[in-house]
Amino acid sequence: MRPWSDVDRQIVRVAVPAFFALITEPLMLLADTAIVGRLGTPQLGGLAAASVVLGTAVGLCIFLAYGSTAIVARHHGAGDERTALDLAVSSLWLAAGLGVGLGALIAGTSGLLADSLSSSARVAGFAHEYLLISSLALPAMLLILAATGAMRGVLDLRTPLIATIAASILTVVLNLTFVYAFDWGIRGAAAGTVLAQWFAAVWLVTVVVRRSRRVRASTRPRLAEIVDSARQGVPLIVRTLTLRASLVLATLVAADLGDIPLAANQVAMSLVTFLAFGLDAIAIAGQTLTGRTLGAGDAAGTRALTSRMIGWGIATGVVAAIVLAISAPWLPQLFTADPAVRDALVPALLVVAAIQPLSAIVFVLDGVLIGAGDGAYLAKAGLLVLAAYAPLVLAVGWADAGFTWLWVAYGGFIAARLTTLWRRQRGTAWMVLGTTGSAH
Image 1: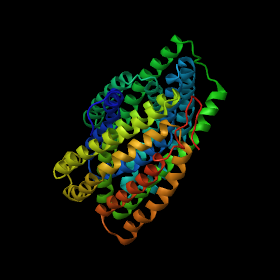
Image 2: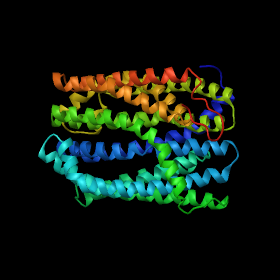
Image 3: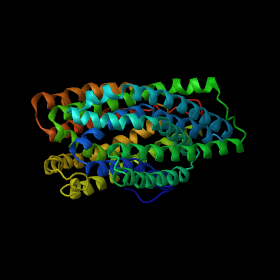
Image 4: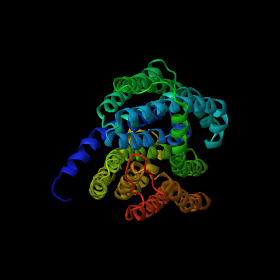
């Protein structure tokens, strides 16, 4: 990498607090996985099935964070603070409405969803219990997304960091208490997570509302802005749907392979999510800084930031790969006492380690294009990537190739994403200047 520059300082000022805020969410998942994993392999399998459903629901609404970051950052970069916070509050109202609707939908279909994603009736029972209780956290989870995105847009990375760290600590304390002290089993893990999510949601929403009132932005629901936020989020929903579909396909294949591969897949997926969120810190810098520089009309600055962030992405990806490869032989022991699950995990984690440098570049470019408002292209690219990945992952199941090959197929998924994103960033169609620009 080139010598330290002002561009590096801008990236670090956003990426460092974003990193610690980002990793707390997967740390909660890892804590849940470790706590539930000690209950037994069927419980771990139930958590795996339930996590896919919850992750898909929240993942489809990630536009609440990404879209909010991009549009708020554009207006903040242009000096229009009041409009920025008007839009931030509208995203909170949209998050609340979507959260209530999705929570009710998941609660009502929890039995069917658990049965369809589980490898056995016993696993399905645990998945059903976890889903039914966790559905109560959906509104909180979406409010956290919207509030965090808004605060990133105005360069307040400290508040989400403190709130998410506090929520993570609370999750671990509550889950250990409910699961072991109260002997509630997997239901205790779900209940602890629900309470911690609402704790963080109330905190973050309160901060956004107070900031809005200081600049006299409206805190009442503004239907036109809410509808517009939803409309602008559609391309990002499609983009995220393709990503979640790939994870659902992998889970279905793992479930078809048996209880042990499904349990191992939960641990591997939790670790991959942790790494992805950690590497995503540079992507968050991409979203925030790209939105600000494009909003300020600085095309040259946007290009310089993009090039530098790619370099940072490669460096962090290599570090992640080395750490995971070194720790792969003993890491599974933290999550399961089942020797068969441990044995299945080690070679898969080595494959995941090899993929990390490519993954890091993918996350950076994804963040840059989201910050530029290039959702339409990301949606189209996601459909192409899913079309390339689906035959690979389904072939693993058809050939009964084994759990490790499931993650080799994931490497093909990352390679396909890199191809589409790299091609786009080399051009200029995504670099639309101003507060209302969006790429075509």
